[in-house]
Length: 397
Image (cartoon, rainbow, N blue to C red):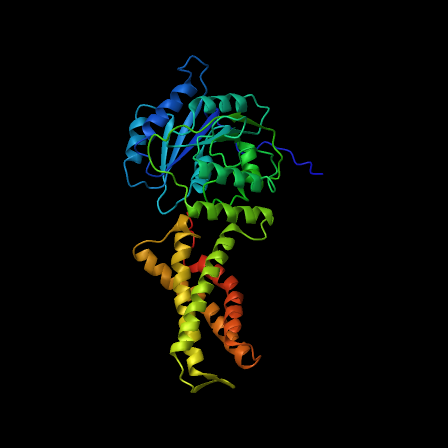
């Protein structure tokens, strides 16, 4: 039985630090963010008659193309407890929340959306719970009782399905692990920090499955309110991120989430590879042989395999840029440089794939189709690490 317990962090305590640091992650939330900040600041400050809670608001913006940053700066001009951090070239709510918490000064850390869907009254209740000091994690839940969740039918059904799936691997029996509004002690965050994937939008799931600690926790019932501005970030990419994170946590880190995504894209590349290979074998019927070292290979086989590798490699790069590495998505000239880097990174894998395919066909007498598929699969691990190094490498800061 685990005896892990929370221990105080070694970082010095700032006597002027607020009790609570609440992070709001934004991307094109200009229509709502000012009202959201004003509303949450007022309720935490006790303007509704309650006791004031010492707090700071940290807005982490992913370089929004609307007026989000200007709206936050306007609020910060009259509220010194509001801070703005703009990230350039990075995307994703989870990694944005982590950035906010990393630069936060409070003893307790929280996160909420910037579109106005989270009820300030519930956030106030969370703050009062965590400040009592007998909880490590407190969350807003849509699934306590029988009241409306605030989600449409299909989204509500999908959320409940993923909630059931995450219950199989989480160390905390949360009723709503998909919640985007929660608070925790700094020490609980630090206990999970090193194992966080930072992928996708479900940071609570990431934290609750990364910490070795079984926290003391509580939940507060609250439905989502009507969005005050901006658009939903939920799409197929968010679902794929969530599945990849679940696989990583379920495998205890043996299969990293980003590698799972990369392999998934690679499987789609195998379909492209197969289609090109079949088409090329129908079009190219040379019949001549090309001597390579001690072997001789049909020229049309060399052309077919090479063309299939090149086209599937290009496919994999663009789909990975959209899905697997969307938080580091390359654009403009960076896209071209990344593509060239991907070609270089995968060139060794491509040569391995080509050599294996030809060897298995000619020497092992394996049919050309399964030989090509097996060779492509075996080269995928090399391609992943090569791509991480040369195409989507995170710059040192």
